[in-house]
Amino acid sequence: MAITLSGDQSMPAPPLSSRLTPAQVWGIVLLAPYLLVFLAFVVYPVCYGLWLARAPSNYVALFHDPIFARAAVNTLIFLVIGINIKMLIALFLSGFFAQQRTWIKWLSVIFILPWAVPSIPTILSVRFMFNPEWGVVNHLIFSLTGDDGPNWLNDPTVALSMAIGVHIWKSLPFWTLILITGRLAIAHDLFEAAEVDGASWWQKFRYITWPSMQTLYITCTLLSMIWTLGDFNSVYLLTGGGPADLTHVLATLGIRYLRLDQLSLAMASIVCAMPFVLPLVYFMMKRLSR
Amino acid sequence: MKLPGVSEFSWRDVAVEARLLLIGIPVFLWTMIPIYHMFLFAISPKEDAFSGKLWPDHPTLHNFEIVFKQQHYFLRDFYIQFWNSTVIAVSVGVLTLFIATAAAFSISRLKVPGGRSVLNLALFTYFIPAAFLAVPMYRTMGNYGLLNNHWSLILAMVTIASPYAIWVLKQASDKLPVELDEAAVMDGATTLQIFRLVYLPLMMPSLVAIGTYAVLLAWNEYLYAFLLLSNDREITLPVALGNFLAADDSPWELLMTTGFIYALPPAAVYYAFRRYMVGGLTAGAVKS
Image (cartoon, rainbow over all chains, first blue to last red):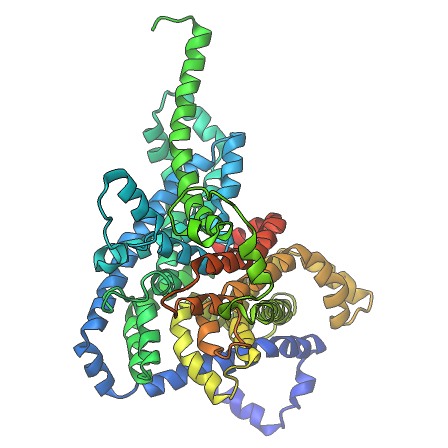
């Protein structure tokens, strides 16, 4: 290697333009717009943010903030419980929607609506349904039992569960759709052979469906976990992080610090999430860029 | 029950159908209740809306009239906000298509040196949750002097939309046969001619899917819009909807009406392009 290098130095390197074919020059020119966007709006902000969060005192302050600990726990609950419930329902419903019925085909068109419409109006609609004084839910409770309904969003556990519910409502159609694609890709004669052998539905699922779908299912679960980390709307628009900042997740906590003009804390809270996010991202990239 | 073979068979059919309905009906209710609730508010006069009825006594389009005539404090900039949303969504769609198509062509067809690394960087950005990038992005836009300017939101959304766009378009263009390019080069076509006359027409279905994806992403975006834009005449519709919450006596029936109007275009676009969306996006979203 060293020899070749010194050999190169003896004669002047040809100018860059003549070493590249016209196609390669075009390649660089066409790639340039994305590279510019990437440098200006990903690399620079990330480096700047890390620089802002460099002081260790930020992390001390962060770990002394009870809201941060609470938000971290909430995020974990959101991911571990929320996502797994969602993916199990999606797996179940993908079997339902794979049935060949006209009415099920129509239902699947309706079922996709939550994913097709923006989240703001629908989340606000849910929020008002559960309004303690004016919402339709407590009206129904009152007319059925004569008692006042609970103040739903004022209990942190109920409020967080409802935020998870809203998240599931919004993204369930997408994941169901993907799992349906996976299910329809399974060769049909496998099921016919199982039918002939008198297999129960559980045996068919256990020995045919699940083995063909488990890679897809696990990939979807991990991807959904990464994306759900960034789900700002479900929490912010439903509970606003309240009551008493007890339902924040990491995505809304950063914005809360930003609003309080504590930018370095906001960045530090994001940096703290990185040890969990980066391995997942690395794993997903290895999986998808084969 | 001792019945002849034929009707025994149909009894089993009925049982299967009933079990399917037992799943189908809750799914339908779960999906429709929040949307129906919004619709109900939009067609209810104020007193009906707050009475908790399942159907208003006097359904009316009066709320739509108030919105379209901008007859409320919260709605005085409705048209300009609708226009802002439209301009931003369309700009994001066009810019994303331009940037991503150029990059995908360069990486997949021209095999530009380092193209693989750029693709990996893009993929990495795609996986980082957008809410985490929002805080540094906000500061950066401030440093660039773009806050409260539509360009800040357009550029931010292009940044978020293009990684996925590049990735999907790169996958799609890998599937085009190399011989097409080779034949065009034989005929003396320049790189740009290949791009325009061979590549773009063949990529049309994917381009439609990606354009729709970028437009919907920008139209639906709330977090970045509310961070980057604050002036009443600069904000987009979702931010205006969020601002309704600021008041104690929010006119919820008007909020729901505006929300309903705001939700219609993306739903229409989605259903119009569903054929492309489902094929182009789910194929790319998760490769098993």
